Amino acid sequence: MKPNFYLKPKLRWIWLVAIPFLFGCSLTTPLIDTTRYYVLDTLPQPSQSTAPGTLKLALRRVEAPSYLKGRSMVVRRGENEIHYIDSARWAEPLELALMRVLKEGLSSRPEVEEIMAAPFSVNETRDFDLVIHVVSCEGAIKASGEGAVIFQVTVEVYAGEANGKLLSRIPFNAEPAAWDGKNYSALAEKLSGSVAQLCAQIPHTLAEFKKTAVK
Image 1 (cartoon, helix red, strand yellow):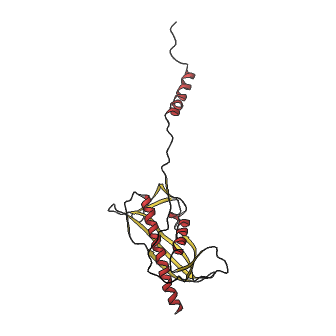
Image 2: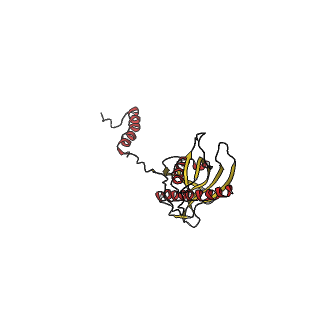
Image 3: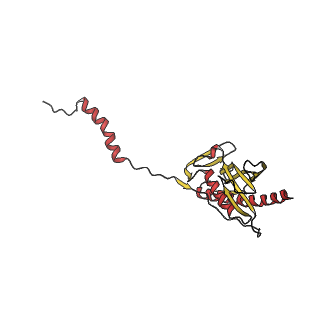
């Protein structure tokens, strides 16, 4: 009788199913998470003011457009195309990060006596309430391939009281900053610098605004 070198049909099917799992267990390597997380920092800006600060300001809120409310950093390509960088993410929601850095930055300005953030006490008196509407806060790749940093906001200025009326809308565009399009740590740093410019501009504008209002 000849030896049977062939497995029975049922056993063949068992081996066909089992072999990929056996090899898969030995060959699979653990996935490495390459995601990096970034924060906005408070950067100092020079001031020419030497007089003691008299401005009392309140930050009501920061509002960002929906496309900036995710954690992934955003890079714009052209007017209507954006890319989400999943491997480069904000460590906190952008609205909260901007609120924190604006409060810290404004409080360090010599023109500012006090900076408050919501919720406000009924006994707190202030000169102006501020609402910051973010227009853009991202990197950009131009058609030429050059990278840039874009930071634009509109500052709404209200009378410093509950339900205070809208006094002015002030557009702000940060000074252009170059970016290599790859270094997201540098992008976070340059956006921090853009916010620092805003922290320097707001007290200067409002101090003049206050002088005009007093007259």
